[in-house]
Image (cartoon, rainbow, N blue to C red; front, side):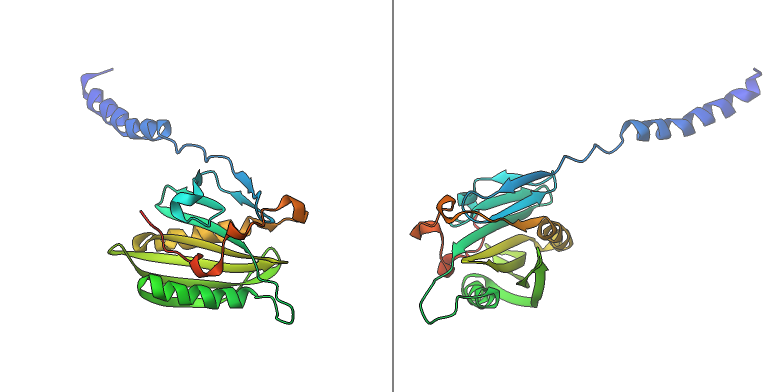
Length: 207
């Protein structure tokens, strides 16, 4: 090899080095999906591996499931037995939505309802509300879904800092796709009076 070929060889090596480095830094494999089956209410949920299960009572005292995502996303499920009063129709998802929005207006500062309407989850029609508001001086994005199944009502509440709003919408949509209602004998369900109630169900997130 003549001396004049040396700079060209160095250049080729220099150009090849970043490619080798990039191959070594290949993105890690996604974590496997996992399932949650409630011991309280008739539902189960398939979740992407990045979601992490938390102590539900830390986020809401009535929550049955609480999960967090590395993108600063939070999600809880609040199931509740619906009141059964003779001569009165059992509340449906629209009733739950109306009660939930009323509570959100009372508990979340500068609440703005941006979008609301019907949504289908596991072949059932529910109601969805997209909103934003101020909690602890931070602007927060909310996506809440209201569902009913038999004697049960469900509030599925996702929230994130406003700058993560797009990620919130994508991830919650994935969660709704993984939602399934499950048939359970009444004897297997937690139907204690303290299992949850509408007045406190839309409690905003706390630190």
